Image 1 (cartoon, one colour):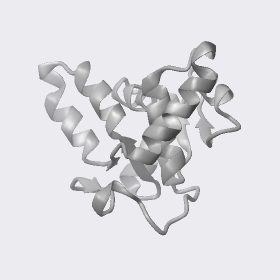
Image 2 (cartoon, helix red, strand yellow; image 1 turned 180 degrees about the vertical axis):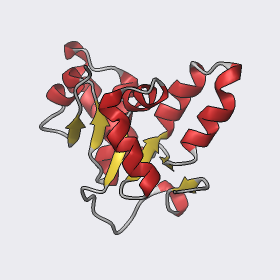
Image 3 (cartoon, helix red, strand yellow; image 1 turned 90 degrees about the vertical axis):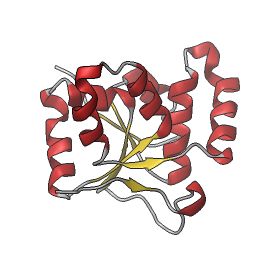
Image 4 (cartoon, one colour; image 1 turned 60 degrees about the horizontal axis):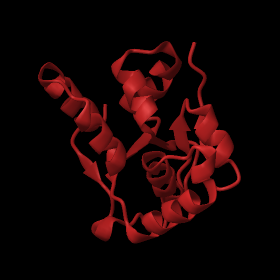
Length: 150
């Protein structure tokens, strides 16, 4: 089992590595589905716990999760987040998200989704999501791994 909090390289940049099938950036919907015990995401989280999958999370996702946190969920929330490597928002991701918002805001792209997807793109990581609309909208711009809810 992976323990302890992991962070990105100094300065918030993940340098000198390529994404591979054993690394994913989990978006907010994926973490919410883990919290809810959804079967569709269970195998991915089991792979995290076994060490077969290196999991990343954007600080934007962390903020979205903290916003909806209830006091009784605090310990469980912190234990789960300890399994993920936290990726900060940097200028490159902010610039990419801003460019996508110019291009796709009229198609329903929201800021949080743009920032999370841009963080994945800049880090060279596919984004794990159940948001088919997002994955379709940005399919030419970033890599996604889509899972389908029951």
